[in-house]
Image (cartoon, rainbow, N blue to C red):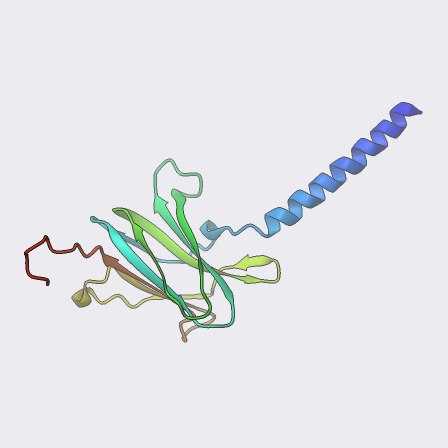
Length: 159
């Protein structure tokens, strides 16, 4: 009888643990599943700026290419919440090849946007200028990637 009672308690505990793990993983963002997003690369350090229109909770993910990475050759190297109040989020990226995606939260899940477009203007020196949206414009999230602008040495004229 004690063995049956112990087995029942163990079964209940295992079921609770499985349900808890399933609900936690449902809320985990998986940006590598957004397969149709553009890749950008540059042979020098880069800086980025991300802005979002009000209305959704967004998170920006940067994944860098590495042949030994677990997720189809990409490791998450940076992730940032994006303010829906219009305040830009900025950061730096090392030299390399990147896959960047903005995911939004809907209910308890992170969703890949259906629309991504690169409006890069190489004349302006842009490495990438990505737009993320629902089924097309308008851009709900904008990501602009530029080469790092080095400050002029003391005494040198600013460019």
